[in-house]
Image 1: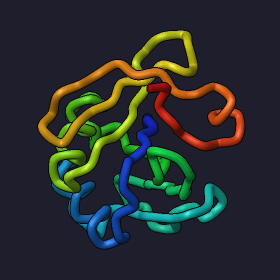
Image 2: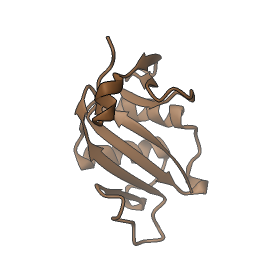
Image 3: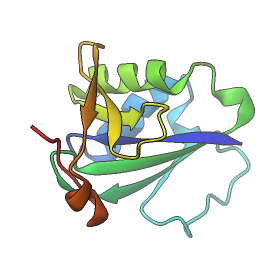
Length: 132
């Protein structure tokens, strides 16, 4: 199993999120398990993608933790994130690969990317605000 996190600017409905994930990961909706608690583990072996969501405050409102079956991750996180952003018409933050925990890669709905910095004080309170 592998995985990654992304933080969405918007908080879509579960139906909208599941549809976007299905198309972005190329996985049938019935094989995607959404939960709001890490302890709510999928009970079916048919699940190929588990997404745990957490509502947040700030400029970005929904943290998504993805756990993906090895055969199901056909693209790297930045490509999957671009598809999700386009389908949900939302910006998202993903790890930029740097050691600095306050710099993130912001992906826009048009697929463009921008390196941003988050406010450290707000992040310590689990709120995601971009330093302007």
